[in-house]
Length: 266
Image 1 (cartoon, one colour):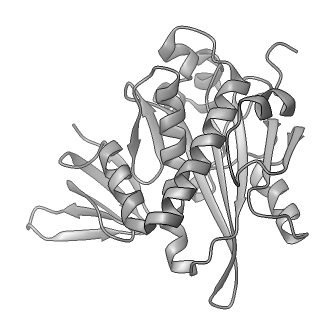
Image 2 (image 1 turned 120 degrees about the vertical axis):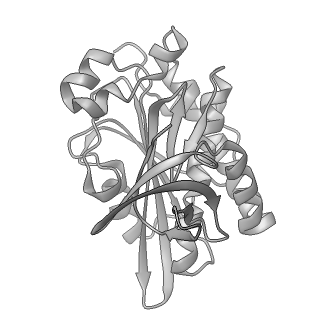
């Protein structure tokens, strides 16, 4: 198969202390997060990585499906066992969005982040992040950071599978005007993920937040927010110290958004 994923080729280009210590590559899984969860429960160590050529039940936030055709994109999940509490875990997911954004920039394309973790290139969504965690009481057992990146999938396939959502999305191949080397991109993403993990360990949440804010596309712009049971509009003010979105409503007060769907209005 042309441009098949290869653990050997990825390792040759990978520079990391923790991420990719152990890499598993599957032809198809239900989702890379599911596959890694089984490994995590069996005691897999931090940095264990699962890659797949396709997912039969890939998913994004709020249980939405993630279109995962065979052999054209990147579907990856990485295991972390950070010494933090469950309340800090959502901010930990910023590590993945920063790493994907840097990997996109490394192939010569502009990249921005739309809260919480959508990656945009020239205004089109090219990647998403799904963070899932396991807890025992008030203790965090592990965090799985899963990413799906549209690399070489055809636009026609996106639109046929996703409809309007497919029209708002794109593959890096379309934006760049050339094929994307999937093994090089995977190695770059994993390397950047490791680097941002080290930044978090050394500098804590604020170091992540500052870098994330530098890549944020929402601040200062009008947005529509859909939360459970409500829809409202306002001006995005950025994120607070926990990574929650702050939106100024018409009455001038800032409203905190912990989990919601955001749409740009301008």
